Image (cartoon, rainbow, N blue to C red; front, side, top):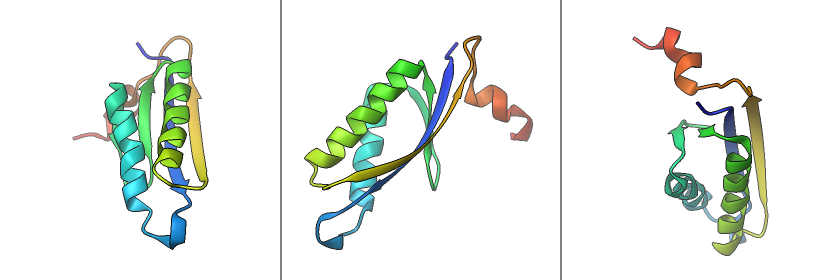
Length: 97
């Protein structure tokens, strides 16, 4: 079982004040390519895995956005870490039909 949940919202600065959605899409692609369990929500994406792995993904997201032309990136991150295990499903099962 994974020991960490990490939710992230990326706020990329864009050249010329262009639309940021293509940059956000690129950040989500990095998560998808990583293979970790994740859920995309309207204002953030939550990943499930090992802490070091998820932090590496955050680093890769920032690098991908800079490579795509973003001059800077701000991320808001929430981390829930439990060495005994934690999961999105377990935390939200009582809210699912």
